[in-house]
Amino acid sequence: MATFPFELVSPERLVFSGSVTEVIVPGSEGEFGVMAGHAPFISTIAAGILTIKGDGADKRLFVRGGFAEANPKGLTVLAEQATPVESFDRAALAQLIKDAREDVADARSDEGRQKAERNLADLQQVADLLDLNAAKAAH
Image 1: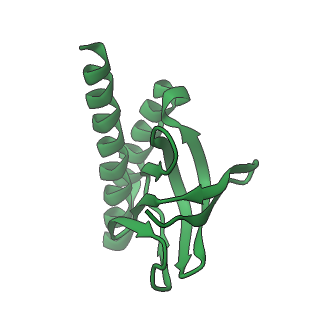
Image 2: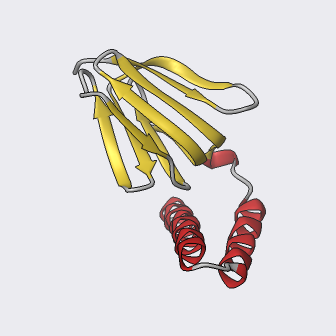
């Protein structure tokens, strides 16, 4: 399978840089996959699980905020937060969900409420995915 260069950058550091076969990104308009030779594309990032496929086992990271830019030469994701799923702090996720619920309750406009509700739904989906994966690992 053809490979392409991929970089995942957070404010703190370069999280990943390397040649990959596919990256699945949680876009704000839905999850999307990028492979070698992808058409030019820009998307904002929703809270979710980003999956990197290449040599060896898939790498899964919790990402939140930022944007992704794909073109025929590669993919760059700039994320406000990027943490490997296996080292992700579930208490931090619970706090993000609590804060998101407060944002929904405090929203002063329909647009603000809709944005807050989307963020809350994304965070709850991540929690559900992490719980599902933990249940699979326990069996």
